[in-house]
Every structure is written in structure tokens, then in C-alpha cells.
Amino acid sequence: MKTSLLMILALACTQPAPPPPPTQSTAPAPRIVFPDGYTVSVEVAADDDTRQQGLMFRDHLADDRGMIFKMEDHRNQTFWMHNTCIPLDLVYIDDDGTIVGIEENAPTMDDSKFEVGCTSRFVLELNAAWTRKHGVASGQRVKLEGL
Image (cartoon, rainbow, N blue to C red):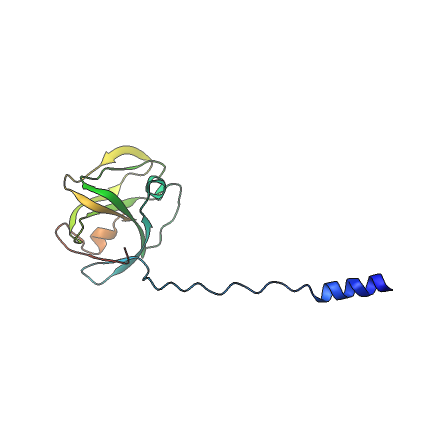
């Protein structure tokens, strides 16, 4: 009888742990605001590992999402689409938000190198045809928020 009473007490005291409280970040979510007012939420690739991985092996990117590569040095950035399955536009952006060049519809699964011939600090990857659809062009300025 004592054993069964102990087992009942032990079971009565076993409760699932409460879910952790939601984390509240005071920093704004990273995003890019374009001249037409359209906003894209971005994943930030700011270290070697995330920059090398990029959007490789993904099969979908929402229209209001992108990935921005924050480079350590200000130079003519070169990119490739190695193991990248999603057709992308690459938007090269300088420190002040000026778009210095665009590579439209970069071929998927391609090891060719893409560059625009101008120095930049950031490269933004968006779905192919996004820039043309929204009238984005070199010389325009975007707002880099939360970077």
C-alpha cells in the first residue's frame, strides 16, 4: 500500500514544464525599405559561416523576404549561385543605402561569379524579377533598418 501511495504522489507532482516566456527583443527586426515604400524583412548573413551558406539548398523564398549579406570590407563584391535553387536578383548596396548595381535573375546552381564593378558593403538577395516588378534601379536609395 505504501508503494502505490508513493507512486500516486509522485505522479501527482509530475507536471509538464510551463512554456518559456516569449523573448522580447528591443531591437527592430532587420528590414529594407525601398523607395516605393515596400518593405522586405531580411535574414542577415554577417559572419563567414552564414555568408558562405547564404540561401543554398532552399526551395522557397517568400516575396516579402530576402537575405542581406553584410560584408566586412567595402569593395567590389563577387557572388555565385553554388547550390542555390531559387532564382534570385542580387542588389548591391553601399553604406549609405545607395543601390550601386543589380544582377537580375542570376542563374541557379551556377558557379559563375557575379559582380557589378562598383564597391559596396551589402548584397541583398531577393526573388528573381522582384527588382523589376518594384521599379528598383541603380542610384536609388534604400533604408537599411535594424542592421
